[in-house]
Length: 435
Image (cartoon, rainbow, N blue to C red; front, side, top):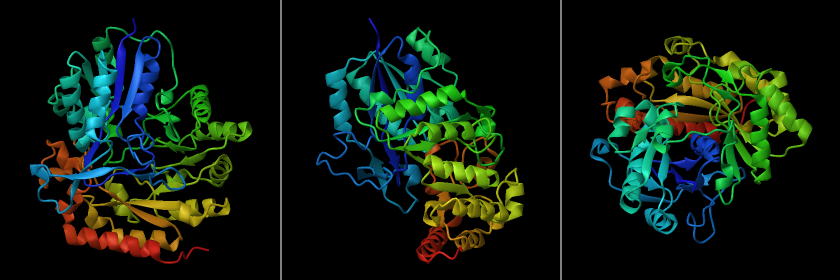
């Protein structure tokens, strides 16, 4: 008899959260491997198309499938008491999951993925409910939290913790490993699916000092193109309309990765909307790339532009994207027919090297290109060079202190943060100047 395995994407505990094409891609990849010997179920607290998400049937969704999560204000944890923001729980109500466990259980195993390190209270809640209602189920915890903070993850009392892509602890718990080769992520576990994610590559060739990937030991690689093509075919069959690329370096080695993929999409007549929430490296965006992206269905373009200051990029470990790179990328996109409102420059807010970042000037420069500016709040990750700089301001051994709202406020103060955000709003509300 096949084991019953439940996959769970937990609720979010945070000051803010929004569905920015957020899906548990790694968890679904693992589920694809388990098809050969397990009976699988999925409970995604953040599934905005779940019947319990909006019982009235009305959910706020924009043109490309994004929207808010249901939320409830809850008491702030003691370590975040100093942050002048409301703390909330985002996602489907806890009682819905408890009823699901009672009616669909018992399960032999529960696999939980948690993305941000400071979202671990959601995993803690899920583990408590599984232990109470399905006490015999083996619990395996994975995802970025488990990878970046494995010792802390073990304090939540799972039966196993998966660090990175090494699934050995999972196979040890299940006492079986898949005999089949690669399988597409188990997107079909969603009863209704309109947004999804995909990756053409693994790892990242760059060594940005604020990023965990260089510390993980994972090298850059291009996935077999046949697998990538099978994934998008699978998503199209399921009725997906919007697909976000989760790659860290989507435009790197384009002849091996993005070019053949996009050419297949164009030649096959696939009609979906593509998005780039993980940010594109503007330096690698050529005229040919821009044309292929537009022809294949890209609708939103997020460009990494942490600062206009060369000193900041050198301190961050790599001269990544300077003003000339950004201007050239925007020009290529504009020439390819992209509406400037669909182009956005990410800029880091609350970085420990803010003194050399020239954030005001950087935002103003991006605005002169006629594109939108988005402030990306800095989250200190232990083990990274920039994260370690933050130990002077906060206790990084407590993952709640990695919170992207908390650290910028502690480092710069509420008033300065509000000034930066107001400038960002003002610039985005002004008419575009690019021509």
